[in-house]
Length: 127
Image (cartoon, one colour):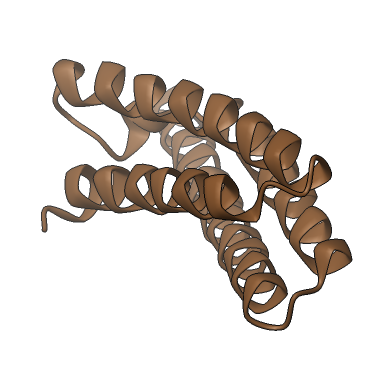
C-alpha cells in the first residue's frame, strides 16, 4: 500500500513538474516571439537577435520535457519532436538572415517559426 502511494505521489510530482516546465517554456517562447516581432516593427536588429536567442533557449528546454505525459497518441509525440527540430532549424536560419541584414528573407523565416508554433499548438491543444 505504501509503495502504491509513493508511486502515485512521484507520478503526480513528475506531471506537475512537466506542466510547470511547459508553462514556463511557453511563456519564454511568447516573450521571444514578441521581441522578434517588435524588433521587425521598430527596425531594431538587437531586439530581433535577443528574441531569437530567447526562443532558442526555450526550445532547448522543451527538448528535455517528456511530452508523452500530456500527449496520448504516439504519432502526435513524434510530430511534436519533428516540429521542435524544424523550429531549431528555422530559428538558426532566421538568425543568419538577420545578421546578414536580409530582412525580407528573415521575415519569411519568421513566418516559418510562427507556423511551427501554430502547428504544435494545433496538436497539443486540438485546434
